[in-house]
Image (cartoon, rainbow, N blue to C red; front, side, top):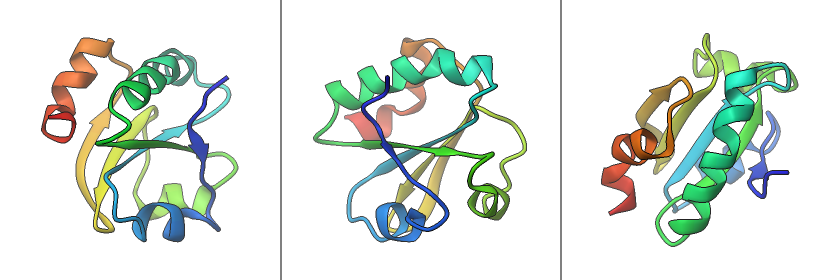
Length: 108
């Protein structure tokens, strides 16, 4: 089970947009195999870099308003937010090394 915080349509503005931290939002769904594959990798990255990035998860089936607002059409989709703005988007499941490379600017 993931140790990442679950966010919802109701909590997204406070937990993500209102945060002064760098937040990675994992847009996922229960039925999505690649989402389940990438989840433990994101948990590892979150644990290893907790001082630099916070990982949260948003279930697109349960929270369609936020998913639609950020035009999530393919999952898994990971978006990095800083100061309430999307600063990076990563689409698709990738091995840990590839994800760390994509996120290097936030993990350094």
